[in-house]
Length: 191
Image (cartoon, rainbow, N blue to C red; front, side, top):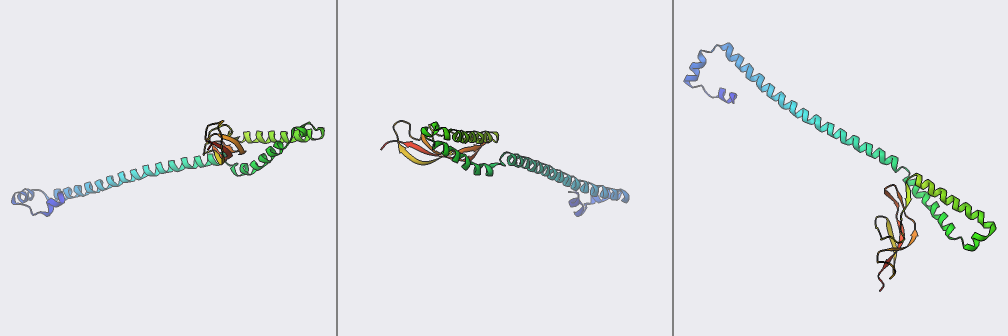
């Protein structure tokens, strides 16, 4: 505003008033106005810089949190690839035990062999449990598309439609993540 006032021609009363003001005082007034303008600019820059620092600190904190979460996830789920590959070993052990007939269990020569396969399966289950790998419940449960993969539907009057009646392949979770869905047969209404 003062710049605008200075640009306008002074009226006679203002000119007469300024005529009595010493030149030195007018210069000091101009310097004071200049210092005030500079101070205002610096205050604006300081406020802007403070805001930028706050944004940078918030972004740094967000990046740190994301990295901490990524590191925790990497530690928790590092065994995912290996676990998926070892599932076929567990499947083969289960198939081997399913193939054992009652007559084979009574045969003295095969009894120790079968006991060895059962002990191996228990050890695999123990290692799975130690690493947070758990089998998904399937038979008798309602179909959950997040954990089960329906391979077939069969008509049934014994259970409600959408209930799993048979597990074709076991499914597994790694802590709270799906490792492999259970492949299942689901009941439907008879035709």
